[in-house]
Length: 367
Ligand code: ATP
Image 1 (cartoon, rainbow, N blue to C red):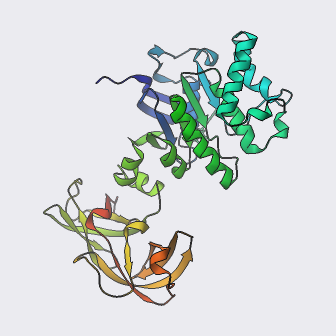
Image 2: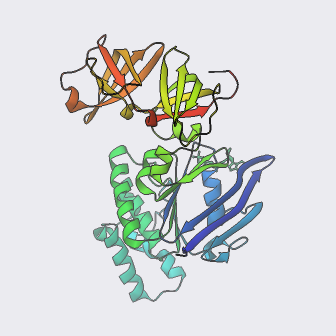
Image 3: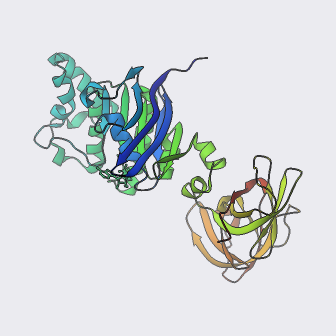
């Protein structure tokens, strides 16, 4: 079945002076998809978005939206809706006037403007604020209005640049839910820039992970979390325990690993091309480790003993720091399983599956 491609970036490159900030960026976005650009500060997310928006021109490469080449096309001719980190509403206009602005520019008849503004205010669940001014709204409400204003023109592409980052934690979560609902309801193709991995996992159909202007991986949230293409992607998404070590042997779909703390463990080698004797970084996520208070594990490999150093109750789960040799291993346990709280100094037994071990080659001999 042929896919409907709404946005295509072909070998896009951007330099500022001599530094390359976006390096041969290739991406196809399907109609109705929500794609996140995720990466640390300075990795080139906003620069890429600004090229798609038409605020910046690429030095190389082609940008295609809805089958049309957009290089050199003015921003207001690209049929985009945009929401930024700061609310960017016009302070001297009412909410109605703010939302109606784009339609007025397009010379849409008055009655139709009223109907469309009314509809989009319903959509963001703020139909009662149309006569107010932006300063009479809370931060979360203002950002909903900014979203309404971006959607009212029924753009072919919605660009969101960290729209949640000025809101407090509770509001962020609320608006995040709201944006997901809206995106699914309207089905507008969306690009969402964020440095917050949880937001990207929550909202996106696919995530583009960027580092230093380069695309590290493009994949579904599941792929990015469970099949990271690099150590950078693995460590950027979610918490993980790291140990340094070496691959001792590779056989029968397994890897025997020796950590520099002296103990051995097994990894899964089916998808990995890592030869014996390679220096590696070894990772296990806190939620993939099972903790027992007695020595009655279920596995014949990847079991070790440790000492509880610290526990932190976090509601649904408890995070526990366990000393294993010279490593401090974080384990996430369901709080209900350990309602008799774990004590510092207590001996515990940890185990994890070979397929939950992530192994990445390590450059040189360093740690
Ligand atoms: P943040 O999350 O902090 O916004 P980002 O991933 O969006 O970061 P960009 O704003 O795209 O990153 O910036 C990428 C790199 O380009 C950074 O090193 C930045 O300093 C540089 N940069 C951005 N705009 C310009 C400019 N107009 N002139 C020179 N350098 C720039």
